[in-house]
Image 1 (cartoon, helix red, strand yellow):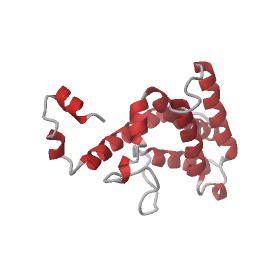
Image 2: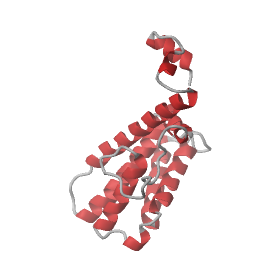
Image 3: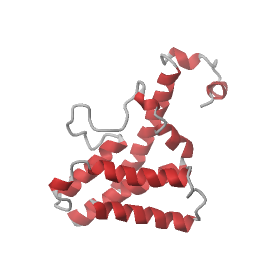
Length: 180
Protein backbone atom coordinates (compact mmCIF):
# COMPACT_ATOMS: atom_id res chain seq x y z
CA UNK A 1 0.00 0.00 0.00
CA UNK A 2 1.43 3.36 -0.99
CA UNK A 3 0.12 5.68 1.70
CA UNK A 4 1.87 8.75 0.34
CA UNK A 5 0.14 8.38 -3.04
CA UNK A 6 -3.25 7.85 -1.45
CA UNK A 7 -2.72 10.83 0.86
CA UNK A 8 -1.65 13.01 -2.07
CA UNK A 9 -4.75 11.96 -4.03
CA UNK A 10 -6.96 12.79 -1.03
CA UNK A 11 -5.23 16.13 -0.57
CA UNK A 12 -3.96 15.41 2.95
CA UNK A 13 -0.55 14.94 4.47
CA UNK A 14 0.94 11.46 4.41
CA UNK A 15 0.72 11.34 8.21
CA UNK A 16 -2.99 12.28 8.34
CA UNK A 17 -4.12 8.65 8.44
CA UNK A 18 -2.18 8.09 11.65
CA UNK A 19 -4.48 10.48 13.45
CA UNK A 20 -7.10 7.76 13.09
CA UNK A 21 -4.96 4.64 13.53
CA UNK A 22 -2.44 3.68 16.18
CA UNK A 23 0.17 2.51 13.69
CA UNK A 24 0.73 1.18 10.19
CA UNK A 25 -0.50 -2.30 11.16
CA UNK A 26 -3.79 -0.89 12.47
CA UNK A 27 -4.25 1.01 9.23
CA UNK A 28 -3.58 -2.13 7.19
CA UNK A 29 -5.96 -4.11 9.40
CA UNK A 30 -8.71 -1.57 8.75
CA UNK A 31 -8.12 -1.72 5.00
CA UNK A 32 -8.06 -5.53 5.06
CA UNK A 33 -11.28 -5.62 7.07
CA UNK A 34 -12.93 -3.30 4.54
CA UNK A 35 -11.79 -5.54 1.68
CA UNK A 36 -13.16 -8.58 3.49
CA UNK A 37 -16.44 -6.73 3.99
CA UNK A 38 -16.63 -6.01 0.26
CA UNK A 39 -16.14 -9.71 -0.44
CA UNK A 40 -18.92 -10.52 2.02
CA UNK A 41 -21.25 -7.99 0.41
CA UNK A 42 -20.69 -9.56 -3.01
CA UNK A 43 -21.36 -13.01 -1.55
CA UNK A 44 -24.58 -11.72 0.04
CA UNK A 45 -25.70 -10.10 -3.22
CA UNK A 46 -25.08 -13.28 -5.19
CA UNK A 47 -26.93 -15.39 -2.63
CA UNK A 48 -29.94 -13.09 -2.91
CA UNK A 49 -30.05 -13.63 -6.68
CA UNK A 50 -30.72 -17.36 -6.33
CA UNK A 51 -34.38 -17.81 -7.26
CA UNK A 52 -36.81 -19.41 -4.87
CA UNK A 53 -36.94 -23.09 -5.65
CA UNK A 54 -37.39 -26.32 -3.83
CA UNK A 55 -35.43 -26.04 -0.57
CA UNK A 56 -32.71 -28.60 -1.34
CA UNK A 57 -31.72 -27.38 -4.83
CA UNK A 58 -31.95 -23.78 -3.59
CA UNK A 59 -29.60 -24.47 -0.68
CA UNK A 60 -27.04 -26.07 -3.01
CA UNK A 61 -27.39 -23.17 -5.47
CA UNK A 62 -26.84 -20.64 -2.68
CA UNK A 63 -23.67 -22.45 -1.58
CA UNK A 64 -22.40 -22.43 -5.18
CA UNK A 65 -23.33 -18.74 -5.51
CA UNK A 66 -21.07 -17.70 -2.64
CA UNK A 67 -18.25 -19.82 -4.05
CA UNK A 68 -18.60 -18.15 -7.44
CA UNK A 69 -18.78 -14.72 -5.80
CA UNK A 70 -15.58 -15.46 -3.88
CA UNK A 71 -13.79 -16.48 -7.06
CA UNK A 72 -15.20 -13.56 -9.07
CA UNK A 73 -13.99 -11.16 -6.38
CA UNK A 74 -10.51 -12.71 -6.49
CA UNK A 75 -10.40 -12.53 -10.29
CA UNK A 76 -11.76 -9.00 -10.68
CA UNK A 77 -10.38 -7.31 -7.56
CA UNK A 78 -6.86 -8.75 -7.27
CA UNK A 79 -5.58 -6.03 -4.97
CA UNK A 80 -8.58 -6.13 -2.65
CA UNK A 81 -8.45 -9.91 -2.55
CA UNK A 82 -4.76 -9.96 -1.71
CA UNK A 83 -5.26 -7.27 0.93
CA UNK A 84 -8.23 -9.07 2.49
CA UNK A 85 -6.05 -12.12 3.05
CA UNK A 86 -2.78 -10.32 3.75
CA UNK A 87 -2.77 -11.34 7.38
CA UNK A 88 -3.21 -7.72 8.45
CA UNK A 89 -6.50 -8.56 10.13
CA UNK A 90 -4.67 -10.62 12.70
CA UNK A 91 -3.41 -7.34 14.16
CA UNK A 92 -6.22 -5.17 15.39
CA UNK A 93 -8.88 -6.54 13.08
CA UNK A 94 -11.18 -9.50 13.08
CA UNK A 95 -9.99 -12.38 10.95
CA UNK A 96 -12.50 -14.54 9.18
CA UNK A 97 -13.28 -17.50 11.33
CA UNK A 98 -15.68 -18.92 13.86
CA UNK A 99 -17.48 -16.52 16.19
CA UNK A 100 -15.29 -15.93 19.26
CA UNK A 101 -17.90 -17.35 21.62
CA UNK A 102 -18.43 -20.40 19.42
CA UNK A 103 -22.04 -19.48 18.69
CA UNK A 104 -23.65 -18.81 15.35
CA UNK A 105 -23.13 -15.53 13.57
CA UNK A 106 -26.11 -13.78 12.01
CA UNK A 107 -26.78 -14.43 8.34
CA UNK A 108 -26.74 -10.69 7.58
CA UNK A 109 -23.15 -10.42 8.76
CA UNK A 110 -20.73 -9.58 5.96
CA UNK A 111 -17.99 -11.86 7.22
CA UNK A 112 -17.38 -14.37 4.40
CA UNK A 113 -16.64 -17.22 6.81
CA UNK A 114 -19.95 -16.53 8.57
CA UNK A 115 -21.78 -16.50 5.26
CA UNK A 116 -20.24 -19.85 4.34
CA UNK A 117 -21.30 -21.27 7.69
CA UNK A 118 -24.85 -20.02 7.15
CA UNK A 119 -25.03 -21.75 3.76
CA UNK A 120 -23.75 -25.00 5.26
CA UNK A 121 -26.25 -24.69 8.11
CA UNK A 122 -28.97 -24.17 5.51
CA UNK A 123 -27.96 -27.43 3.82
CA UNK A 124 -28.36 -29.23 7.14
CA UNK A 125 -31.69 -27.50 7.84
CA UNK A 126 -33.21 -28.68 4.54
CA UNK A 127 -31.85 -32.20 4.90
CA UNK A 128 -29.29 -31.95 2.10
CA UNK A 129 -26.29 -32.38 4.40
CA UNK A 130 -26.34 -34.82 7.31
CA UNK A 131 -25.77 -32.98 10.58
CA UNK A 132 -22.98 -35.41 11.45
CA UNK A 133 -21.00 -34.18 8.42
CA UNK A 134 -21.48 -30.48 9.17
CA UNK A 135 -18.73 -29.90 11.79
CA UNK A 136 -15.64 -28.54 10.08
CA UNK A 137 -17.20 -28.45 6.61
CA UNK A 138 -16.17 -24.77 6.33
CA UNK A 139 -12.52 -25.79 6.29
CA UNK A 140 -12.86 -28.08 3.29
CA UNK A 141 -15.08 -25.71 1.31
CA UNK A 142 -13.03 -22.60 2.07
CA UNK A 143 -9.73 -24.34 1.37
CA UNK A 144 -10.84 -25.62 -2.02
CA UNK A 145 -12.25 -22.30 -3.23
CA UNK A 146 -9.46 -20.19 -1.75
CA UNK A 147 -6.87 -22.55 -3.20
CA UNK A 148 -8.33 -22.19 -6.66
CA UNK A 149 -8.48 -18.41 -6.22
CA UNK A 150 -4.80 -18.33 -5.34
CA UNK A 151 -3.87 -20.50 -8.31
CA UNK A 152 -5.90 -18.31 -10.67
CA UNK A 153 -4.73 -14.96 -9.29
CA UNK A 154 -1.05 -15.51 -8.51
CA UNK A 155 -0.27 -19.10 -9.37
CA UNK A 156 0.31 -21.32 -12.35
CA UNK A 157 -3.30 -21.06 -13.55
CA UNK A 158 -3.24 -17.25 -13.88
CA UNK A 159 -2.93 -17.42 -17.68
CA UNK A 160 -5.77 -19.87 -18.30
CA UNK A 161 -8.18 -18.82 -21.05
CA UNK A 162 -11.52 -17.55 -19.73
CA UNK A 163 -13.42 -20.67 -20.79
CA UNK A 164 -10.97 -22.90 -18.90
CA UNK A 165 -11.23 -20.65 -15.85
CA UNK A 166 -14.97 -21.29 -15.86
CA UNK A 167 -14.38 -25.04 -16.18
CA UNK A 168 -11.98 -24.90 -13.22
CA UNK A 169 -14.50 -22.96 -11.13
CA UNK A 170 -17.37 -25.34 -11.87
CA UNK A 171 -15.14 -28.38 -11.28
CA UNK A 172 -13.99 -27.17 -7.87
CA UNK A 173 -17.50 -26.13 -6.79
CA UNK A 174 -18.86 -29.53 -7.84
CA UNK A 175 -16.05 -31.28 -5.97
CA UNK A 176 -16.85 -29.29 -2.83
CA UNK A 177 -20.52 -30.25 -3.07
CA UNK A 178 -19.68 -33.92 -3.63
CA UNK A 179 -17.19 -33.87 -0.77
CA UNK A 180 -19.67 -32.57 1.73
